[in-house]
Structures are given as structure tokens and as C-alpha cells.
Amino acid sequence: MSTPFTTLIDPSRSHRAKRAPRKLQWTAAGVTLSFVAVISGCGGGDSAPAVPPTAQATAESRCAAFLGRSFEGATITRATLVPASAAAPEYCIVRGEMPQDLDFDVRMPTEWNHRTVFRGGGGFDGYLDIGYISDPITSPIGSPDLATRGYATIATNHGHGMALSDGSFALDTEMLAEYAYLAVPRVLAPAKAILRERYGDSFATAKLVFEGCSGGGRQGLIQAQRFPDLFDGVIARAPANAFNPQFLWYQKIGKQLAKPGAALSPAKIKTIGDAVYAKCDGLDGLNDKIISRPDACQFDPVELACTGAETDSCLTPAQVESARTFYAPTSIANGRYVWPGFPAGGESAANWLSLSSLGDGYIKYMVAQNGSIDPLQLDPTQYVSRIDQLVSMIDAVNPDLSRFNAHGGKLILWTGQTDWKITPNNATNYYQSVVQANGGQAAADEFVEYYTAPGVNHCEGGTGADKVDLAGPMFEWLEKGVKPSTSTIVATQRTVAAGATPASRPLCKYPQYPKYVGGDANLASSFVCTTP
Image (cartoon, rainbow, N blue to C red; front, side, top):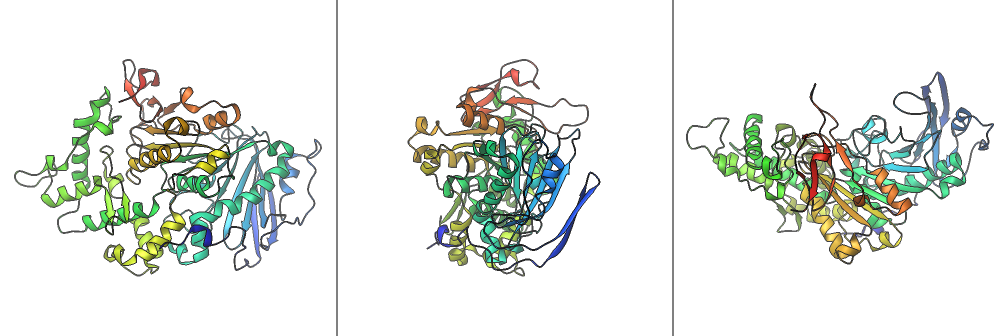
């Protein structure tokens, strides 16, 4: 039996150890603020007088006044006013630290738009100073231009300071609990106190939204399912909510490719991808290397079986088995851990041969709890008790969102359809289960909408339109009652080849897809969201 997550660690508990005093420095705009910080246990308290939010208080003095103070168990160890630039208007960034290694940043624009987004992480989270997690200016993940548009943002390292792909933190049970489900609710209390201090009464009536992709999408669904009163809205992109089956799929792929003669070279994978595009690219009305109808694409790798001597343009029987393994559903331990298969599209060496680092960390440090084992030799059926415990801690697959809905919460789900780290069918299956568990389609439509992005890889990249603002539509839904699907949402291609024109597409609510109806193939106006 798995342990219910509520019995593991209470989010109000302080951790077992305090950091040793350390000197910290952060320099910006020619001003250096430093002090010796000692992290205290959870609780209120304020170690320095606040600067009154009056017209006489400058933005710099208000920002500097946070340094060294305590908010709900967190001590502020950095406070910097970043001057306006071409990338963003002026803002104050503060770093809060909590026992034992839980850190967070709050970015507060001087000219605030009365909207706040808690930005989720990804991978195994960790080091907060990389842009992927904390910086809405440089990160390619999530809604673009949040800083430019005056949003306040919150981000956390989710309990440890290790690299995104380093799973060794999981050997510490409390760090694992932070990563699994505790970090966001623990951080949110001091972060909200900081925002109230800066913005006063106006923050009390402002809406608060969580947005994340991959691991960040899982974190968002954790909030909706387990802590339904914390956020007004959740945007979960490509959520890794079926975390354990997903990572067991990584191991399954690794084992298959390690079989004699079963490895797939980049050239072989390109052959597979080319065959898929040749067969399925035009199903949406346009040959543009964007498959908008993966549901209609019927491809079997055996179509590429070698009939003579092996070349890069054909597959041996062992390689056919490997390719089929990528697409096939996953069932581990006689169906105890299941995960849906992958649709065709986006096959590339970059997508298919980049799964080992996270998968290895999961097997070593979360399942076996032994960094010296060979991840491909571990038999998951011998670890079902441990995996059950991990499922109860980390996975976020409960479709019953009745408490979140009763709170007035809104949910937007999104996934790229050429995502080869998390099958797009994972988000689709979860959405369908939410509809069924929450009163049917009409009832679910009142608080959840699901969008798919053809040609988009994991969170970003690919041949499709991967850059789309979902924060704006979410706040319009929360503040004005305007459902995102009642307006046209346009996605654009973030990165294109030199001299190329970025593609744009209408973002279509599931089960619709963007059908080409004529005109410039790079313009969203040349497509109409159509039900298959």
C-alpha cells in the first residue's frame, strides 16, 4: 500500500537544521548590499523596520528595506533594484531562504499590473539562478514577456540547490518531500507577505496564478489537487503529473536500445521522421513539417524494414522493435504503472536520444536509493513498495478537482504534440478523466480548458508555434469571466532559421486542430480551428 501524501511531512513544519551563518553579496546598478544571514525556523517576525509605502519612499529604499528581514519563516538574503532596460521595466528582486535549502525569488516591478504569477520549475529543479526556473525575462518556458508587461513573479528551487538533472538530493527524505509537493505551499506564505509589504492593500484583492511546464506543470496540478485554495488559476503545460510511469518509460527505452543490434543511430531516426512526415504531414491540408492531425497518422516502423542489405534508410528487426517501443504504451509490474503511447511526429535524434540523464537519476536516487547501481539492471517489479510511495508523494493524477472548482479555481492545460519527453496523450488522458470526474463536458468547461500545439516539442521548440501567452487569457477569465476559448489566441514560433519567417497558428481548444484554409502558410489567419 502507498502512504497517503498527507501523512508524509506537514508543510508547516520547519526542517531539521539551520544553515550556518554566511556572508552574501549581490551587486546591481552599482549598489552592493550584504549582510550575515542566519536562517530561522518557520514563523512570523520582522528583524528590521519596514519602510512605509508612501510617496516619499523611493523604489530603491523600499527594495533595500527588505534585506535582512524575516517573513513567515524566510530570511531575505538579497534585495536588488534592477534599473529599467530594453528587456524589462524597473523591478526589485529579493531572495528568501528557508531551512534547509529551500530558496525563492520574488520579482516586483515598480509599476505593477496587479497580476502575480508563480513560475514552476522543471527536471529535478534545483539551482535557482538559472533563467529556466526563475527569470521570466530570459526563460523560453511559459507565457512570454511577463516582466515587460508588469507582472510580479515568484519562483523557487523546490528544496535544493543541485543541478536540474542531479537526482542525488532525493536521498534526503525532506528534500524529496519538498520536491514532491511541499516547496510551493511553504514558499507561498512568505512570498505573499513580501508582496503585501510592497504593494499594500492592492495585493489583497489581486488574483494569483501558478504557471509551469513539465515538472512545473506537475507542480501546478499538485496545487489544484492537494492545496486547492492557494491559487486562483493554474496553467499546466506538458505536465509531468504521471511522474513515475513517465520515468519508468525512460528506463524501458534505455533497456530496449541497449539490446544487441537495437540501437538507433541519428541517421536511422531521421529516416523514421522523414517517413512519418511523408505519410502524415498533409493530413491537415498543408505540407509544412507540422503534423496537426497526429490522431489520424497511422504509421508502423515495420514499413521501413530492410528487404536487403542494411542501410541508413531501413531498419533491422531489432531496430523495428526499438522504434515500436518508442510509440507503444507502457505497462510495468503487470499494469500497476501504466502510461499512454506516443503519437507520430517530431522524431529526431535530439528528441529520442536525450532521455537517459533524468531517467538514470530517478532509478538511482529515488527508486533504488543507491547512486552506484546500474539503472538499466534494476527490475521495477522488485521495488513496487518504494515506487508506490513515490507515486503517493510525487504523482498528480487525481481527476477530482471539485474543491479547486468550488474555490473558483480555473485550469488551463496545454501540450506540444511532438513532445518526446512526455507523451501528449498524457495531458489528453488527464483532461478526459477530469471531464468525467467533474460532472461531464458542460460542467468541466466552466473551469478547465485544454489546448494542443501541433509541431511543438517539450515545452518549447520544434517546427510549430511554441510561444503563446496563457497568463493573459487566464487573468481575463479570473477577473472578467471571459473564457480563453471565446477569444482567438495566436501562438508564434519562437526560434526560426536565419532569414525564415516565424510561423503563427491559432491555438485550438481540444479536440480541434488548426486546419489550413488558404493564404500565407505562416499566418494564423490562414487556419481555422476545426473539429476532426
